[in-house]
Length: 251
Image (cartoon, rainbow, N blue to C red; front, side, top):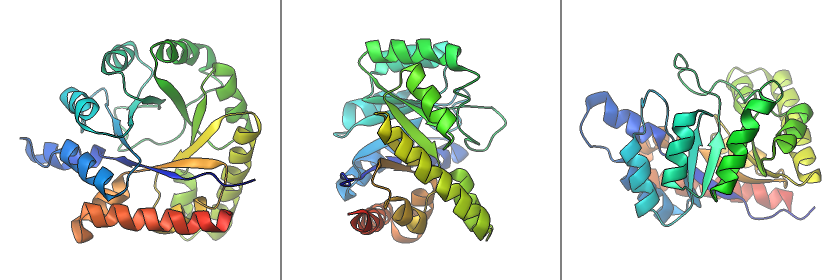
């Protein structure tokens, strides 16, 4: 298939993490979002957690008002978050699993076991004019369940693949990448838009960009970490270059 353009969504959660570690207003995640867009980001992602450990309610309001690119609101499927999303009206909402004890999102939604619970959230967000995606494991069963729930977009959890590479487990990494490749193909086959994210760095973004069915990558922690050494704008430009290089192989 012809590979469509690959979008980069920059997650600004951990700019807010640094701010909240000391309190006050700086560094400002909205300023980071504006800088990322200027450097080539196609959209901004922010996760408003129940415990507000990084992004705050006012951050979401300001992001919606001040950025010129689409805002992707990551959220748990709860009544409180649904109410906030329908008031903020971001371009998109990505439903993700959430536990207070986790450092970061540990896996995809249980779209099979929670099928009937998730469907009303998807329906209400779509009626509110918000594009909905589901953050899921890269499995055929999860892809099919996401379609049954009514979400037009899935985001494949790439964490297991990236972790296997970090740990030097090459056989496991190959298996995990194979799962991602098959899941992305299945998503495209049944008419779902396919995104991917979690744990991606320059090398893994370059590789996953070669899968033509994937049209968006959402990357945050790595870019904020790189920004310490090279600056956020440079990190975003380097990520954009890595993605474009990988996409060239898909073509």
